[in-house]
Length: 120
Image 1 (cartoon, rainbow, N blue to C red):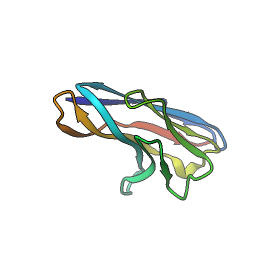
Image 2: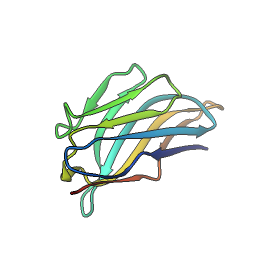
Image 3: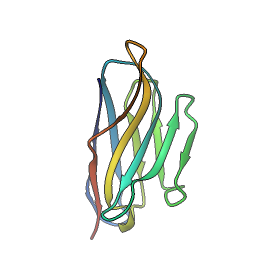
């Protein structure tokens, strides 16, 4: 079992910043890739940012230049630095990870989500 726990969400004014963290625990051997997704009320879940084990990244067009995804190594937490936040960023943000467990079984896990609200 691999669990992902997100933290760092909250209420922020437009133009402000937040930093989300996602930590993996449990039987983890390695993590190949991690990503941040978000789901606003009445909308489908969408990819925000993704980072591979080689640290290549890709972003949704709506966040390019303002959001940065990062991780230190294959097991450390993954972060999402969000700057110049807009009201449209209001959503529940979910962390996702793909990797292998200590018994070398592949896993695909989701966190429980953290609420981000951008409002004055």
